Length: 262
Image 1 (cartoon, one colour):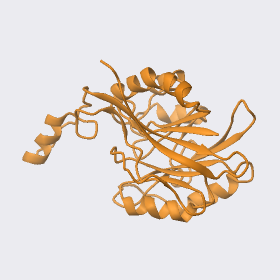
Image 2 (spheres, helix red, strand yellow):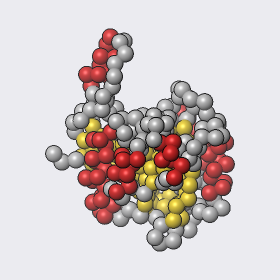
Image 3 (cartoon, one colour):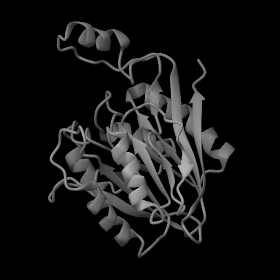
């Protein structure tokens, strides 16, 4: 199975990158299934029915999220009826939606997808990302050995630790949230693909997706400033993961960087 995981999609520029680049990229690379982190698709923070609908129309199969999942009010109703939206599984009991799910491909193969939020430097009341993820993985492995985990976290060390914790139990642990693609992709000893951060899909003439002048104003003056989504130099970041259908072991992980032509 060939999986494409698209890094944090930021605002309308990020959605535009997906719409323009994904259909051809799927054909070029022979992708069987597409996952994207979508927690920033609506105005740079949150998810709406319209914005996630654009991604599904562009051939994204499932979206994951992160700490901004609850930023838009219509997510609460939307996530109850749309199982293709996976939110962090370690929110306290009672949170709407699901933190993991199993999806069937036309070939009959199944893939499990989980989303977890790190606790280091994250301002949220969360259950242990390690124990909750392991519990979800054990449940998914009853149906499939092909499992992708999106670790949405600030701290590199926490992401790396989860990769080792799940090595051999999942097909891949991919990091999201920091918006800068790292160059540490590898296959861990027991066969799990790992990368600390897939990167950002959105405007690259920016500070991790926001207008440069807004961010500089905050840093230089310490005055609270609204961060607007930037617009220029739209690019896509992703990883392509090749997985053995029988064992669920990752055979390769490759970073992808694509620019939208003007």
